[in-house]
Each structure stands twice: as structure tokens, then as C-alpha cells.
Length: 410
Ligand code: PLP
Image (cartoon, rainbow, N blue to C red; front, top):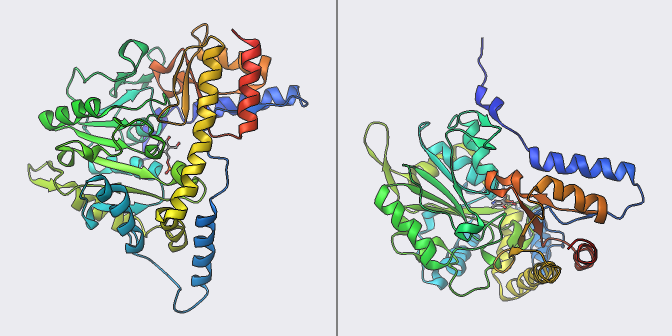
């Protein structure tokens, strides 16, 4: 009889967002008239910009003609989009990425989940803590962890790199040997970024130890400070050690439309179980062409529009809107006496929860002020005592939520 993958059982699932939804729904059921404002979720709320909408309409019309119809596309992305990504996101920043090092697909969640298939089962995984939960969960499902430890609030076998107030939320280099490290900067959930010299420490470490960096750059467009790198490949030697992931979700409001890309440089090579030197670019090409049939033509045309002057200006105006929300939250909460981090290079605020218990603070905000955020402990053990607020909201809701908190809790 078939035996199923028992590693799935180790998963703590989507405990964080399921529990947030449960507590919020229970509260709404008990207080149907309450005006509950949700500022915890990391999903965009504003519509796609006109340049994207026009491009999508045009692409739909293409699909209704013999000349413009597109069936299966190239698995790794259409050249009309790839050429623009290579030029605008890399070449114009002084980085040369080859055409066949760029892979277009349907989301950074899928890409960061799938990449671990290239590694052997005994690969030691390190994550910054707190962390976007997908990196951990997908490695647990692949059998690279022990059980969840209720005391430590983490999985045995996964190396957690604490990001705390004591180290300014900058992870220290691992004390033990690790093989693959997920770095996400600008960071979800802390809302902080690494400066160029801080990221260089990691690239140098990986070059020295042979570790691979999986660099999730989903929030690149929110960077405002000059010394924060827009790509890990701005750091010398990064092509030998790093894979970069980017998403159109937060950049252009594509969370429901779905599009992303990854860069796997040809310099990135490691040995396989036979001791043969293998190119990760060749493996990822195999993986994507075998398991994936390409992102939709219509959506890639929509994404292409953000690389025009008009599209870029419209998208940056949306980013400015969200970052103004971040500023309102950051400054409003500081004025109210809270300790607040992030929100300068990323659309998240990392708030120190008074009392130190993130779920108790969640309940207090919900019950007293009808505001919903995300308890930090849901992002990893070092998230306890913190709270994530998201700038992805309307201005009205942001102002209202901060005003309520400001007037109430000190
Ligand atoms: N990576 C990080 C760090 C995220 O915060 C998110 C979404 O919240 C994603 C990836 C998901 O990206 P996508 O919508 O492209 O799957």
C-alpha cells in the first residue's frame, strides 16, 4: 500500500493567520456593530494602475485573434518581458544578468517554496527569526526538520538566526555549519532593510563556507535609503553564492494577478551526491521546464507595462501612497509612546508590544480599539513581544486605526 509523506504532519499549518481570523470573527460575531479595521494583513488594497489595465485589455484582445493568440508560452518567460526586466531592474543598476539566468513565473511564494527541491534532504537550512513562514514550512514538508518544539516555538533541525532589539534586528552569522540561508530584505515582518556593508558580510560568509543565499527581494521597490542595495548582485561575488527572487505582487499590486521572477546565475555551482560539480542554473531550468508551463501571456503583458515611463510613474505613486501610510503609523505610534521599527524601506511596522506578549496585545487592540494586527510570535520565536502592522490599507483606515490607538493605549 502507498505510504504518505509523514513530514506534512509536523506542520503547524497557517496557525498565525487562521488564529487571527478566528479571534477576529468571534469578536465580530459578538459585536456586529463594531467597525473593525484590519491592518495586519500583507495584501495590497489599491487597484492596478491604468497602464497595467490598458496592457491587460490589449492582451485580452490579442488572444481573440489568430495573429495575437498565444497558447503554451516559453516556460521561462516571454522575451518582451524578460528583456525589460534585464534592462530596467539590472543593467541600469550596473548588473549584468544573462537572458537564460532569468526565470519568470507565477509568484515568489511558489519560487521560494520550490527552490529547495534542488538541495539534498540533509541540507541544513537557516532562516532569520522572525521570518516569512513559507521558507520554514516548505523545508519541513520536504523532511529537513524534526518536530515542532512547543517551548522553543520552532522546528528542531532548522537553524533560527534571531533578529532582536539587541542586534538591531540584524542577524548574526550562524555559529554552526549551515548550507542554505533564506534572507529577505527589505524584511517581512520587521520592515527593516540591510545596508550594503551588512549584506556584504553575508555574501562573504557564503563565499567562505560554500553556503547558498536564497535572497527574497519581494519588497525592493519600497527602498528609500541610498545605502540599501536594490539587488544582492550589487555585492561583489554574489553571483557565486546567491539566488534572487522578486515579485510583482507588492511592486505593482499583482497579488491576485500573480507574477514573479527568479535569477539563478550560471556561476552558482555546487557538488551533488556523487561529488560532481553541477550548475544550479541548469537544475532550475530543468525544474521549471519539467514542472511548469509558463506564466500567462496576458499577465506578462500587464507586467511589461510597469517598465514604461508612464507605468513606472503610476506604480511609484501607489508605492508612495502605501509608504505615506507607513509614515503615519510610524510617527503616530512613536508620538503615542510606542517603540516602533521599520516602515522606511518596507511597508511594515514592527511594533514593540507593551507587556511583551504579542497575543495578549492582539486581544487588547481588538477588544478595546477594534484594530487587528499580526502578533510577532507567529513569525518565529524571536517575534514574541512584537507586532506587525501593514501599510497596505486605505489612508482613511490607517488614520482611523492610529488615531484610536493613540487616544487609548499609552
Ligand atoms: N516573499 C515575502 C517575503 C512575502 O512577504 C510575500 C507575500 O507576502 C511573498 C514572498 C509572496 O509573494 P508572491 O505574491 O509573489 O507569491
